[in-house]
Length: 305
Image (cartoon, rainbow, N blue to C red; front, top):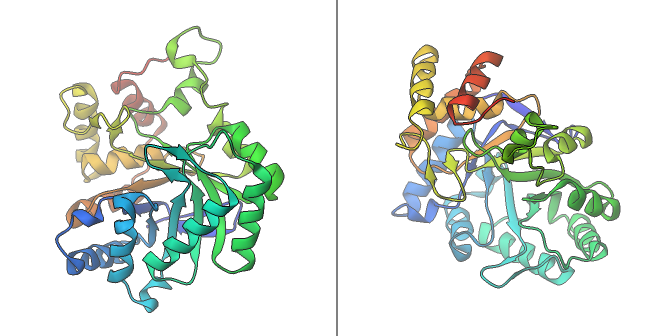
């Protein structure tokens, strides 16, 4: 699998990572380990977690399934700052406690990357900076980032955190690509032209912040998967044709569409099906033409002004 450089050269990682939100749906530890081994064999040595996935049980199940020697061959990323159904929390106390709890569940001495999961409008950036510095000095976390944040939220954090924000994880797929729609529809008075994120795509490219695409097969906010959906007949016809051309699956075409963007976006896929994982891996070998990229964009119901 091809590699990308995260955070202006600080991290080399595969351009596709495995999201671990659903691994507790597997029957036992052996199945989880088999999935991890398959991922590693296919070049997916980047694993994405969060403290709230299965109320922490996803991290714990992963930690039980790996050995110290295997852990050293992978990049582990996790997230914190959500009290489910209650609030978001960027306090120093919560960040430090959450990191320690994730370390215990994952059975590791350090986390490669820690993301702040969703924006906390009550955040004190000085507290975040103190938490990051404490974790970094203790060797508990190597690098930091955020998830679902806009340009100015990252700018504010980085002003206090010494430029430590290297990643912004955002929902992105062919059918859910607002961060691209607004850039295409500049100076056009339509819904697609509404800029809701402060031109976050362009901002990240300017600042060397890597975008990670979560839910790359979804449309809407967890409304469903567009692959095979009756709501996206044109898109599925085009994906099937391109899949046949490149000898891959439609899933791989959907990921190749994300990887084709020059922002060097890293895709995070959440499958627990080993064959599907192998199929998705082939996206790394597909380089869509400019015309194909736009054909998929239009087939998803988008318009060019």
